[in-house]
Length: 420
Image 1: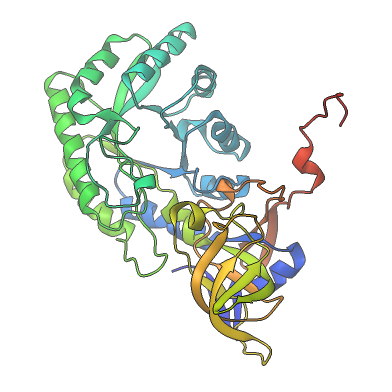
Image 2: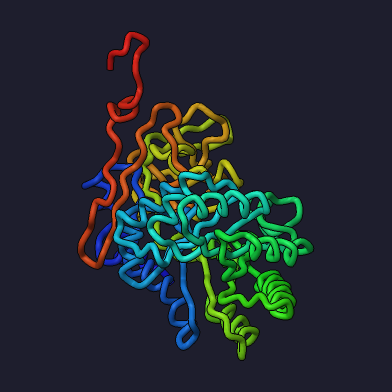
């Protein structure tokens, strides 16, 4: 369930007409629902009542400061992959002690900053990273809490670009090398191994790969305990899918009921890193039709949104539902099977192909499920200003990121004579 619904033929974001937001703030724009973000966060938090846990929102899905602030106020921690994301959490009022730092290429200055602010844990992804982090922590005369990300070689059955748990992927330490890696971590004076981590991929619609991965982690935990290495937490990452079309992903409570059974009678807290499943269906991307174009039997709806705004369809071949903002039929609207395309000079610039729509010039369209991996993956390709972001809370709207001005696009550039 989300809070984007039609009322008298007009799409609303909570209690505000989407057309009103588009007219006020222009298009293209991203619109997020406060109630949906909170509901999706609590789908995890409520399912874990009575279980020691930390839900670290995977902020690479959507890192707008207002979204982070909203989730921090609900008690969320954050999964970060860069020092930039770390500073965003701090700016938004998040608690550094609820941050896990993931990613395969953490740099020394990023490690230093994370240690300075006292994050909860580093998710270490290689033996080389163990050595680097130990060096940084030792130079700072401190000890870094670490969790080793173990690659269980489990097929998540998802798109290859968002699969992260196979041997062929760049992430994590091989399952076979886990014990040796923990032994090495224990030898290093700047490290304190406190947990174990796993994240096998994104947009997962079957819990069986997730549970298979958990079972492999528990076997490692037991082997470590036999060696006297006692871990405090298990981090299962994120990855639960969302409904874009006909997918039927498990509800978080369904998945977590199995996890809780596996962790019963174990002195382990649970860390999760959901991102897409919190943010995706909490947002839409709104774009206006510039013109209708027909090449023989091929119909195009050319809109003002493009691949630089929402790249998932071009990058992954991802399907997202495209719906009219107003459903009232008008005589001058054309009904056809449209490719919805943008103005960018690429044949790959499309938001959706083969969509049955009734359209005329000026009509607004909403691309559903755009709250995750939408604005955050945007660019200024073709010197296009990035879209505005708007957060709706019941009857109120908040402009949480202004549309970029044309002048801002070259604000950091210089001509060869040093001017500008």
